[in-house]
Length: 339
Image (cartoon, rainbow, N blue to C red):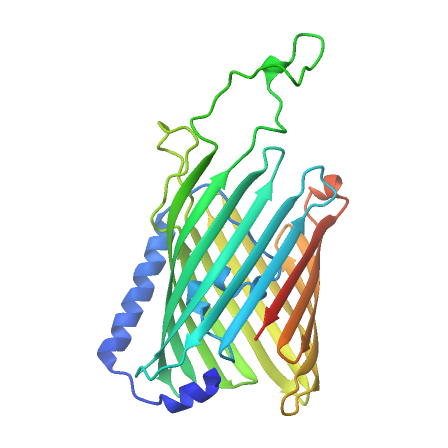
């Protein structure tokens, strides 16, 4: 049961009125994204194309297969005294029930990010849902959303305060009078996305999408009287593609642009994939990609497919001025997908 077969089953003509409605929705979402200015930064991966539900909830259920299990791990700047660690575990699937004219998808994602001496961390549990509508025989538009609950927290155990300095030495056992109202806070979160897939065959596909995260601008202060601390909104634009160019060879092209206040991230990547065996019940391939995060890092990546298991390995090589500190060691990243 794959998406290409599903599209052929659900052939039909879309009405002009519905097409206009979709166009208006896309325009409205774009205007909303441009309107807001925020501050901060969400987690990110160099192998963003293997972290689908983190870049667009409308990619939920959009793959060849019935269920997809995914995990990602990133160790950023391991040469820095306190590196950043990010972990994701996710599952998404199609709901294989007759539901003309389209079909539903659902998923669950768990993200955990920790950094700094304060061990500032953000743990998020998100529930994804999507609805896909075939527009033509070889294209489908998907609307997706995510309802999530996050916990932001930190620890004082490894922090030092000025009052622990007696004028000549630091005394770790000295009492600290600085107090926070709370060291953890729960954050409800809402995100929406839209994705347009063009799939001429299982070997030719393009995904073009737009997503807006943290639409509800939830507050996340550690001082209860500070209402100005809000989780920033994030706009993400994605392009993911894989196309057969000759016998056994495919060309992969991926791109992601994210905007979050003063933070900007644009990453593009491309490379070939060679299919070793694609007989019935077997799917063995090797892919090589070169990803580039503008003004920040190069991230060469190796991708290996063994039947239903896909393994991705990449390593960031810093090109920004921060390489003076990191020695160009941006850090490794691992992704595992099982279909």
